[in-house]
Amino acid sequence: MSAVVRRSKTAKRRVLKKAKRRARRAGAAPRGRRRKPLAAAAGGGPRWKLLLPHLRRGRQAVISTHVNPDGDGLGSQLALAAYLKQRGLRVAIVNSDPVPRAYGFMDPRGEILTCRDPAARRAMDACKLLFALDNGTLSRMGDLEGWIRETPAFKICIDHHASQDDIWDLRLIDEGACSTGTLIYQMIRTLGARLNPAQALAIYVALITDTGYFRFSRTDASTYRLAADLLDAGVDPIWVYHEVYERNSLAYLRLLGTALSNVNIECGGRLGWVSLSRQQIDEVDGGEEDTSEIVNSLLTLDGIRMALLLKEMPAQKTKVSLRSKGEIDVNVLAGRFGGGGHRNAAGILLAEPLERGVERVLEQARRLLAAES
Ligand SMILES: [Mn+2]
Image (cartoon, rainbow, N blue to C red; front, side, top):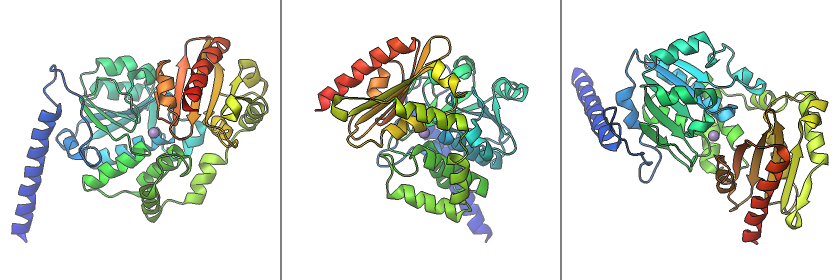
């Protein structure tokens, strides 16, 4: 018995030593030296064991995600936070923006803070380990951007998006993953832990929201297998569906109605777009809630290849949500305007008024569709 224990301890130490060595080689070099970005391991997901040397008991970790956090960002944060706490780290979840109403049910204890919260500030000051989840682009970190740039904490990015800034000390990226939540699940299982029911719920919400309930392009058999595992771990799918999709405000439904009745169709029915002015939004008392379901509704039109929603924002800004089908790459289009996302779903925040924004983005959208036909 004791021989077995001894052997396994030695084996663990060996794994840890090896991971440390590999981490040094892969870019987790002493601070101050330039670090190369880390690619995913050949033939599989990210090399999770590179994390091990950093997960030391008692260290303060801060976990953050992009502006306007979504189900994937928040679910990944909650699941990772629980795992790090199990390992004895001190953990704070800190975002630029508050939790949207639709996801409030995931955080009944109010664990998710904004960076204006004093408790968040204390954690940020003591932070040794920073995790950026579901986003590697600094400009999408909102009010956290400056702090992330300055903090001496070791910076780890776990993500499934393409565009990444070169600020991360360790990048654990898999662009093939359908959600960051999937990656957190993989990480927890690879590092030998089990999920508790709250973690299973968090990852399930990440999975269903980022795949649009199993209908977007990176949905495959493994997505359903993971969902089955999460149901086995205690997730109630009917309750989750109700919480996420059936608690819309009347203002949101009216805004959806306004958008759908004003949709513009171009390029022989392949491009659908709609713009929403402040006035239209204010008329129905619409808030700043996520409008991604509005643009997804445009995609249900027969024959459509690309859909755009352009929303007038305060201070002469325009928010653009882009969706596409198949090979049409809206991530590239968004990139031309400083935005980003995935091939079939991306976003832009333009520092231009609505009319000008519509003009410029539509011009590029038409070109992209012309190149396809
Ligand atoms: Mn995501």
